[in-house]
Image (cartoon, rainbow, N blue to C red; front, side, top):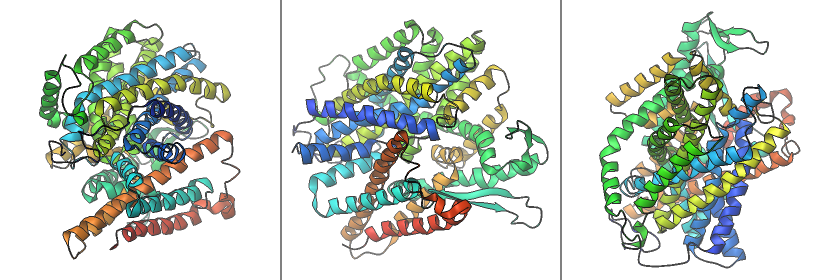
Length: 640
């Protein structure tokens, strides 16, 4: 049976198969805890996490189909729905909450307890799922074929390939195997760097006045995302990166000249602008411009989709209080009385529970900002995927506005900063969880899952991983201390600086306003503003490989074929292969995170074979390897 937009899921709406079972729930909880802990460590160490949806789906297939001899695709999907919640909640938590530990180390507050961290994480995780419920029809159903949701689509293809077997399965696992080996060689054995970087300076004559860097992360998942997204979306992202790295960074360095910047060297001395490298300019200036652009792009996108959201909300409210067992299985969501009542109850709990430091205004801000950023995040991951979702940009915007409002109500000083971080943490988790939930609902939409069961699964995964994250943070802080080399917590350090900057009135407002103006100009030019804004915020090293994947998709689409069926088969083969690449890198990324926790990462590190020239020689090796990887995508689309 086809859905209202003509799409036919793999499992028909009239067919009932095992889905929300004891086995799927227990296995999903275990994977949520494991992946949440691993990603918490990875994010605190290097400032980024890896999407867990596809790795969890692959593990689920291995356990359920091979070991337990179960063959329900919806049961597999339920495991990945619950299991992937751990990674998303960990990402939202570690980007903000370590700031509380840093202030405690400075003697400004008490060290957060397990109860406080877990309570904040539970509130954010559950609220993120609730706020995504009324958005499902608008973003997942009505925009099917418009928003690609690369990881959700890839996860669906992996599950379908495992179900169907045969040629499609071989294509997926070919991409998986090649990507897994590639990822292990570059980030495990470190035979070449996963990020190649080349200086671009002195191109216009003497004096080296034009200074920036060009490069890309030579990783299979980004190329796969680019292929699934296609050339149009990839080009918008890349255009934003070009704006940042080839216009804004050189301009800041050139016009700053010998003037003193706000960047300190190792000795604690302020550096001149012409002494900064492009990465220092990006982390201290461009990220604020990008945050302003992302916030403005989110607001513009929200207004443009507001009519659809209102219709969806009215449709959902039409079922308020009705028996949710009515209607087609694939169209059932959590009842609105649970969503609205649960949201209000969470707001009251955040206000009433001691230790969270959220007053009535803060609880109100969380619900308002939560709905806004849940919408923005769900749409953004539909464009670039969860791994590239600029949650930190949304967190920066939230912290700025929240801290300003707290100051206006005389909630200042350390108490105000703690309240701002608490509110920002919940919003950050909301945005991250909404993004993950939307990807999972897209996968469920493809395979024919029951939305209400997936939403309950997300809630279970959120609570399980929230209870884990408090223990993980306490353990890591006790072992090393946040801000130290082992767990530098770069994103949380940035959030701490933002809150202190607003509270102490030294935040670079001009940069944020510049980002807002750029977003407005881009919208006037009728360029999709959110995709462009994400490109401005993220390093060009992420958007460049996505662009490469998009170009391969364009080549495959424009190539001449004997028939439309042959053309469709070629494009679909590339999608399956790209899905496998995303899965392979995700699996090895988690494995390497576990290696790092166990201290095995240094044992397998072979970068010493280059001596002191690892980056120099590795750049060229990495480029060659990435070109071969891109060629392999095109090869996977050959005539079968």
